Length: 81
Length: 152
Image (cartoon, rainbow over the protein chains, first blue to last red):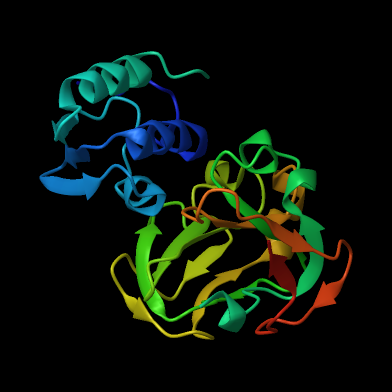
């Protein structure tokens, strides 16, 4: 998917994403620029440097993977300004 | 780890909820404290690894301590807009750092009038739920000082 939020995954968007990912029982990672980052770690997510227009792949593996993937996809598409 | 945590900058302590940016004040990223800096030298508060550092903007640095605790030091408010101007970095992403090691030098005079505030949030982004950080508002601390905040 493509990140549309104007600041990319800076402060607030990253915090919202980490908060939701942290509630999941599944492993949640994001592949960006051939690097895989743990989406449950704020610093790893901020350090990935995901910007507006970045193309990312969301990977969710675990017992609640379908619900987690649906929620996170919606969250990233509808990140508040 | 947190008993040995070093103040990353010298300055005046500010409770996090008084930082003029809701991302920090509302503790969305986690609890912590802030420093109104007296000097632009920033040291690592812990032994750890640089896990979040943008080489182009250089306005914030995240360190994962050896015990897993994550610390984000965000120099000033809205400083991402400066595009790195006024910030000199001495480290890079994935570097191992020692507590007390100089990470960044910030030209506070140069950036002062270009951003809303120089107040620097220091946030623990993965504290266990329910743990809160408190500091004595207005107290002056030295860079490298220990034991200036409490957890409860």
